[in-house]
Image 1: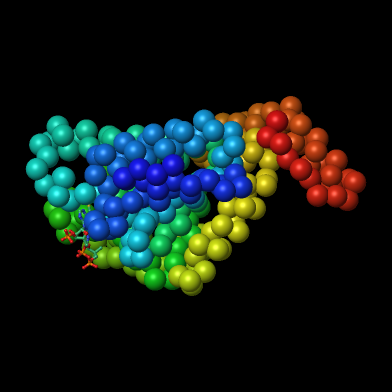
Image 2 (image 1 turned 90 degrees about the vertical axis):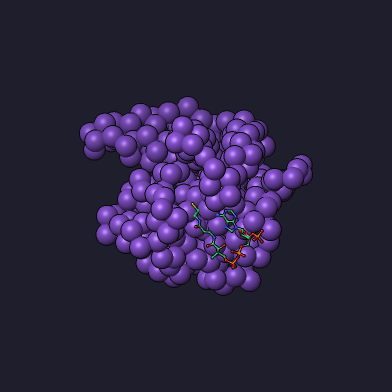
Length: 260
Ligand code: COA
């Protein structure tokens, strides 16, 4: 499927969604936020989609931020609504029942880093630059940046990135725990697709259990989180895939998971 704002393609259980405003470095305007919301709802509902890869079109940017031209004229009430629109969409990404990988092919700034952080895994090209430059515009992060960065890498780095607005290299983002892997730009797509293929062949309901444990259990105290994990652990014993995975191990063969 192709439309003006997103390029979407499917192959072997992997849905790739590319934000398609390369002339604006894939800046997130309201229409793009809405298109992403719909695209992720569709990917969540489609059982043939096992993994989602999110990236930006063109050679320069993943996403260079929320659309500054659109924000320039907003009233306070519209600003709040714009923030909620992005936050709602990114929360949907974060709570997706299947893995979402951000393939960070260039600038991931402001809303771009916020969007990447709402994905479950981030693979960055060594040429990528990430940051929260809102302060340079007299703004603050508005799509969850202060909250997700804090949870990913702690107060010191969060305050440094948000207060200075200075972008950092992919390598530094790796050191800080903001991205999972950094690869040469030429290898980014192949390496991301290798990881996506690995996840696409894993047991979908077990993947979902892990995502739920981290998303839901991770927001509770340790007692509730451990109880939640135990309940999810019990639940996977109801799946055919758990019988298949354990049997395949005992029979010394590769498992074939069917998502049931
Ligand atoms: N919102 C709207 N338009 C944006 C944008 C954004 N966040 N980021 C880039 N663009 C547009 C530019 O206005 C330009 O459009 P034009 O050709 O019509 O003038 C186009 O994308 C290319 O950007 P340009 O600035 O010319 O590219 P560059 O390579 O010189 O610089 C950046 C790249 C990323 C350093 C620079 O675009 C930038 O600082 N962008 C804003 C980053 C930001 O503050 N994001 C947080 C927003 S809250």
